[in-house]
Amino acid sequence: MAPASARLEFRIRPDRKSRIEHAAELLHEPVSEFARAAAEERADRVIEEHNATTTVPAGFFDELLDALDAPPRANRMLVEAAKQASNLVTRS
Image (tube, rainbow, N blue to C red; front, side, top):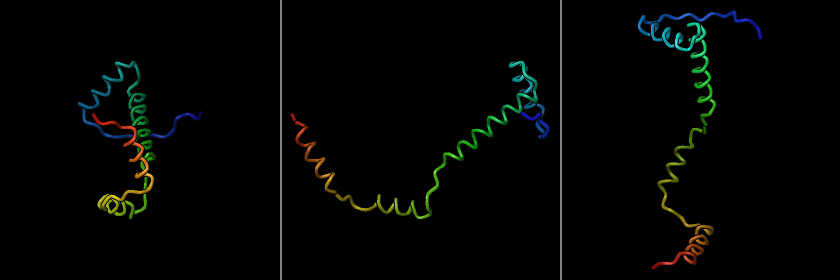
């Protein structure tokens, strides 16, 4: 693995810096390693969530809402399933 050579710098409020330093100390890690690992973990989560998003064609939701608003229609398979269910279920 190539040695790290890129830098990332940012400004932070003193109280937040103290929290990060305290957390790094609790893990016996250098602050820079703690911050780097936290940023990488967050980046991985964001990328994973983005990649898990399903994209659909623009008209999909309009078609879906139209289908949901349409009156129900029984098809042959539903009629058959209802007949089978009525033969299996007994009423007391």
